[in-house]
Amino acid sequence: MIRKKILVTGGAGFVGSHLCERLLNEGNEVYCLDNFFTGQKQNIVHLISNPFFELIRHDVVNPYLIEVDEIYNLACPASPIHYQYNPIKTIKTSVMGAINMLGLAKRVHAKILQASTSEVYGNPKIHPQPESYWGNVNPIGDRSCYDEGKRAAETLFRDYHRQNNVKIKIVRIFNTYGPKMHPNDGRVVSNFIVQALKNKNITIYGEGNQTRSFQYVDDLVEGMIKMMSSSENFTGPVNIGNPDEFTILELAKKVIKLTGSKSKIIYQPLPSDDPMMRKPDIELAKIKLDWEPTISLDEGLIKTISFFKEIIEK
Image (tube, rainbow, N blue to C red; front, side):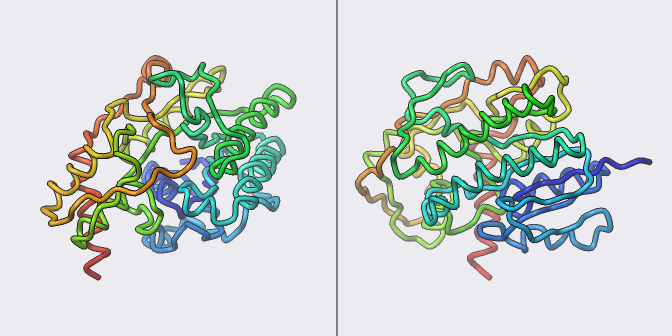
């Protein structure tokens, strides 16, 4: 059996670690590259004994050479707390990381997938958001280092494809949750679950009327793998997300109910440039990838709560 050699940048992170495990289970050789800023060794430590798994400590802002067949480019801090910690480094990771990985793909004739984001749509004026929507992004706001970095990375992918015939795939990932989320990443699902399990007040920013569409990590990984194996003339971008839409207040109440928490809800001012609504139009993914999410919010939250319970009780 000839195994595909696959590089996953950001492979020790929340999504990357799930992807590495799935790719290994499918019989591939997996090279997990991470600088461990937000990635954690505990996410992939159980894979290290597998002879077809290799862990590489490296930062994608610097070039890296390796012979592979496919590259999943996930490397970039993805929660506001982490990407705003060093905004210049964040945009460098998106832009220089894309340039370095595209250069590698060009050199070794690998197919490469970019993990882009629904944040390219900014604070949208169209709802739900189709791939044809150009977005409404503040280029100089607190979140711009992430949003504009990801937009620039998409531009680079398209141009390497047009100019150098690099085989590319672009997925736009909507809010994702599940086990192995960083407990202190400040994202709404992990925040609410940790606060609820500790019976602390649950913090809602604004009035909680802003909406999000939450997809479970297994659905995302399935969508990414299907995109990588899709027909060569389909480059994307394609939305990968769950179109079931909830207000932040609804999510908080769900978490309190599922954890049996005594937490109360408190309200804080809304942070700058926080999108008021977010919901993917996934018709393209259904048609081109035969993909749609299968895990409901309640089902996914129960699995995620179980993961956080273990962490907190240790």
